[in-house]
Image (cartoon, rainbow, N blue to C red):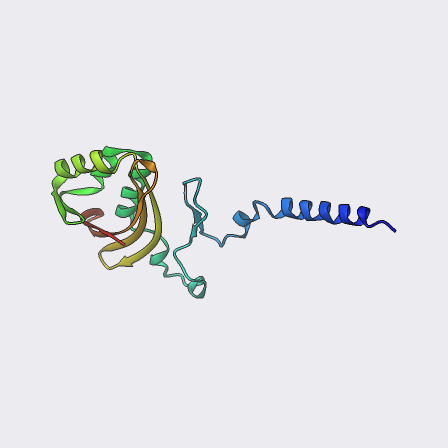
Length: 165
């Protein structure tokens, strides 16, 4: 008795099953989950634990709008939008280097941020903003993890402190 037809049928079944489950990870994601926009990212973030999924007071599920404006501007490579996310008298500290006001922040962002890829790994809200754990890849490749601590006032970034994670 030959086992080849059985083996072929099992191999075909395995291939079909693999094809049916490929891509189902998106369908299995919890409501509100977002995928990172970068093609090499396999992480999903929901900003909430399954234990509090039914809690209607879910401030920690979304990034503060001012911080999100910064993240979006980096993704869009939009220098004007990035600068506009800050108050005109904002302070930015990049691993000890200090920049104050729109002009200095614009120069810094033009030279060091725009053209890079920023991936949010974790969001930790606080009363006046948020701290994001990010992976930043200058020039779009390589990169490092850092904590971006945003202090927000009146819907704009008043202070941003960047530290290596």
